[in-house]
Structures are given as structure tokens and as C-alpha cells.
Image (cartoon, rainbow, N blue to C red; front, top):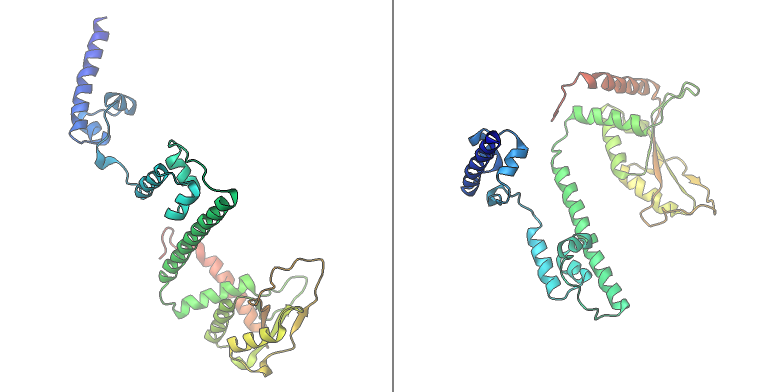
Length: 290
């Protein structure tokens, strides 16, 4: 009995010290180090009921939005109206104001639906702005590209998107097909970097027969800056009425095929370059390579 009473007295004494330190503004870690208490369960019991100092509280970027949402809810606004006002999601609004009374319904279902659509448009616009900011920041991180970097990029690009020779069909030649204008421009820059003359290039457009074929041909010719003599006959994909095509807008221009004449030797070098990259990659230092 005496031992139990002594331990209880020791705990109460330690608790008084811990609470005094807590009220001085110390964090749990500081109290632990100051008093030598390394058992987290005991440490939490010692300061139970004492609020943490403000400086230890993690700031929340949405605190202001939350306070404003509660204020608007108290004024009788619906979730949709608050979403239009603040541009945040209804799930967040619901979480912030769920303890507040619901406002009386004062609108028809049609009016409520119109407000909901406006709120969703605000959310979509905010998300699109966030996407654009992220992409712009990422683009700014690249900086200038050296010739060596372009060389490595081009090898990887070709091995990902270009045609490859197969054991069952030996076809060693450089052929690149893509619908992305930026991919096409990057690939042409790479070809010129490694010494391929424009005279060795041949192009043709591969496109659905129901598209605006003439507009697509003009677009690709202008993009690559080559005359009609460099273009072979356009390849048309026949229309299948059973399929539901998605690429039917004005931006659809099919794919551009780029072929390099007399390129068997170059193809073998590209394959060798690619496997050289593969073999060198594990030898690179681990961690951050920037």
C-alpha cells in the first residue's frame, strides 16, 4: 500500500511539473527532454486536459475559407451558393458546416440546379487554373537543353515511338509516326542534330478519310517547312460506321509519318545508342540526379 501511494504521489508531482511546463508554452517533445520522460503514453497522461500552445499547432491554409463558409451558412446560404462564392468543393463545405442548421428551401428545383451548375463551373475553372499553374512551373524547371540532352531525348523518343525491326520481320529503317506536332518538331531537331540532311526525309499524312484531308496536308507541310516534293501520297483510313470516332473536331489532323531514306546503318546505331543508355542508367548515382 505504501509503495502504491508513493508511486501515485510521484505521478502527481510529475504531472504538476509537466502542466507547469505546458503552460509556459513548451511542446510535448520539450517537456519530454526537460523531464526525461520517454514513454509517450505517460507523457500524454501527464498533460491530459492542457491545450497545446498555439505555436505547435500546424497552420491550415483553408482556415480562412472554413470560417467564411460557416459565416455564409449562418446567413442561410446553401452548399451550392457557398461553392459559387468561395470556389471550393461541396464536400469540404459539408465537412465545415455540417453542425450548423440547414437553411429553409426558398428556390425551385430548377433554380437550385442552375446554382449548382454555376458552382460546378467555378470548381472546374479553379481546377483548370491549378493545372495550368503546375504545368507552367514544371516547364520553367527545364531551362536550356544541351545538344547531348537533345541527343539522348531523341534516341529515347525514337525507341518509344518509332518503328522497330522484329526478329520475324527484319526491317532496319528509320520511320517515325506521331500526331503530336511538338513530338514531330523535336524529332526533326534530333535528326538534324545527328547529321540527317533534309533531302533524305520523306513524309506522308495518315488520316481518316472523313476528315478534312486537304487542311491536314497543309498543316503538316507548314509545320515541317518542306515542299510538296517531300510528301508522298496521303494514306487514308477507311471509315467504319460501327465505330464511334472521338477525333472529329477541327483540331484532328491525323498522323505524320517521317521516313529517312537509306537509313539501315542509322537504325543500327540508334538501337545501339538505346541499349547504351539502358546499360549506363544503373551505373548512374542514386538519388537526386539534377
